[in-house]
Length: 180
Image 1: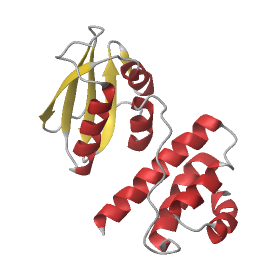
Image 2: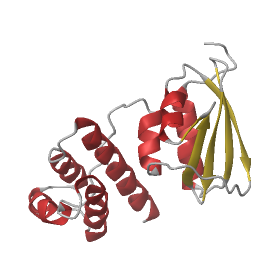
Image 3: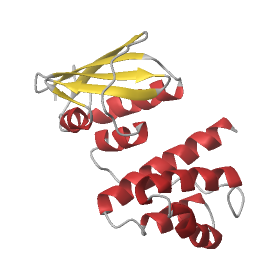
Image 4: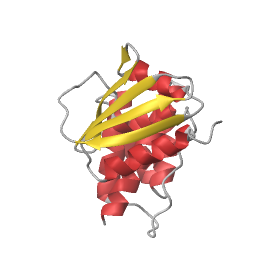
C-alpha cells in the first residue's frame, strides 16, 4: 500500500471519533483503487454515503472493499440524505464484517436498567415487537451486558443480523458507559 493511503480501519476510527463529537459535515474519501466516495454526518449520525453512482448501504459496502483510503473531513451542514442503515451498522459494514467486541464487563455483577433498555431497543430492531418477551428471560439469566448481548444474538436466525445486533448493542453500551 502506498504511504499516502491509510488502511480502512483508520477511516472507521475517524468516523467513530466524529460521531462521538456529534460532528456535522462531509468526509471526502479517495480509495487506492482510484474511486471517490463521501460519507455525510449530521449530529454525529451517518445520514448518507456515496460511492461513484451508488448510494446508501450499497456505497458503504463498496467503500469497505477498498484496500486503502485517503480522507479529509469538511465540517458544515449538509442536507443530502440517502436511505441508510443505523450508524452502528454502517461502522460494522465498514469494519468488513469483523466480529464486534463485547462491551467490557461492568464493575457490577449485573448491569443497569439503562443498559438493559438499550439492549432491548437494539434487539427490537432485529426481532420486532416480540423482543421484550424474548429478552426478559435472557436478561434475568445474564451476568453482564456482554453476556446478555451474546444470549440475545443467538435468538436471531440470520448470522449476519446477529452480528450486526451484537456490534450495534455493544457500541451503544460503550457509549452509555462513556457518558457516566
